[in-house]
Image 1 (spheres, rainbow, N blue to C red):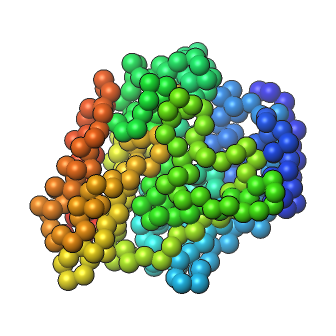
Image 2: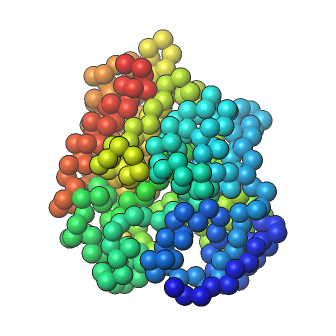
Length: 328
Ligand code: SF4
């Protein structure tokens, strides 16, 4: 392991200043992914800036009925916060579907957004990986790609984003507030926060180096009574999604006023199924309609050699999640 300096930031501005000044510096909070990456030699920072004691762990209501979630609030505390449980149960379900209780007790919300793919080749230093070493190739594209993407991949990278929480946040049209070197905060739409791999898969998101996530806003919605997070995985706990679905419906007297659908385990970022959402608006909340929406949700899938099963799995998972959301 490469030796590294360790600094503790006293304020968000200090943390930003330290990391922005050094390309090989990283923020560290819960460390539930970064420490693994360092131990495996996938990442080798020469400086870690501890942000864990910054005052960014509050979860509170916003004027107008939304919620703002501190970047350093733990996943467990966020999932179990009374406002989240009551008004944003989709987020609670998604967080509790992720990782193990021990990891959720350590992991922060900002870290959840920043976690890196679990593509096996990314962690195997003996194999080519454009995300770990740009220009070296992608071992997964024509290799073991059972877990890889069926949407939005490129010849450079076919990895998927591993988070469950992010799939719910994408469905709920969350916003990410980040602080930069100028001391100002800018806001990024959640669906624009993570990026597709294109020709530069080494970049997972649209943050500049040194920008610090300070909070995540989730706007008020009408989905609390009709939402569901469905995760399909190889074993019942502590496994990443083969496919997951965040489904949210606003239903009035059996008619869908609006719908949100996001899929996990299928792309380099949480994947919104926009065509299916549009189709659902104005339709009756019934199984046949959900099956048609599910067909639309996977219409543009492009499976690889070993993950064709994900297309049917995603289709069935979408139909099932919509049915559960509608309490059918
Ligand atoms: Fe690396 Fe991405 Fe290819 Fe996996 S899919 S080997 S992360 S470039």
